[in-house]
Length: 232
Ligand code: ADP
Ligand code: ADP
Image (cartoon, rainbow, N blue to C red; front, side, top):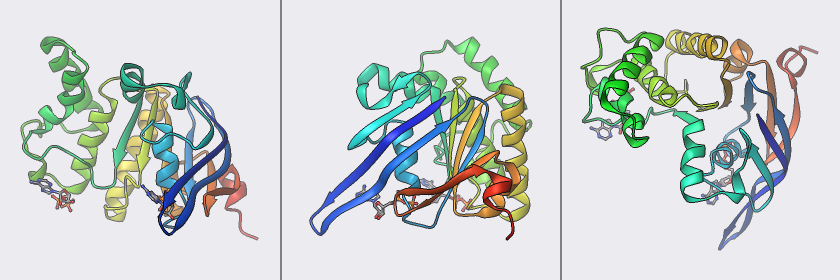
């Protein structure tokens, strides 16, 4: 589903160059929950932005869901972004719109007709367990509920890959667990490939099948979670 070959991302700054991603090779299979862990500044966000085409690699190749990300633009890139969806630490919801309207938003952009949109939104609300909160505004929701809206919105156009950028870092431990359980449920039910970046080891331990450890832009270790995190 995802293949990175010799990927380098260089930021040119006045103070010098930063290799945010340095010679990364990585393959993630369909249906996997794959974790990328590392300290702040390790290059995780840059890597995730390379996966959905928000950044282009300085060199190397990024393939996601059958597309070569660095070669596409315009319409093709917009289509890719529907297939490679994302959730965020601070949810990135539209604050003047209700739960239902937030979830419908990507469907409107994709040109889905109203009847179909309403049906799809109802399905998504059930999937993430937000029944009864359809007409609430984000400010009236708890952190966990906001992330459920984020997840429903991300799933609206049936993506092939879900990217999670520190998706539970703003939540308390109990809410974190409930969101992680929802992600596992979605992974099982839809066979969705999930890539998550985090600085929290317990998040990886709880739901990931495999993990890559990033340091200074490089993947310094990767493999099954049990092997990478085994106690000496
Ligand atoms: P992480 O997500 O692991 O905290 P980042 O990918 O945000 O790491 O950052 C990796 C390195 O790249 C850091 O040194 C950071 O300062 C640098 N960096 C990230 N984004 C930019 C950018 N847009 N311009 C310049 N430098 C950047
Ligand atoms: P939480 O209670 O989970 O911290 P908040 O409601 O405080 O969530 O908001 C989370 C993020 O959304 C913050 O970064 C905040 O600045 C931003 N935010 C909150 N309300 C609005 C708003 N009305 N318009 C734009 N951004 C907002």
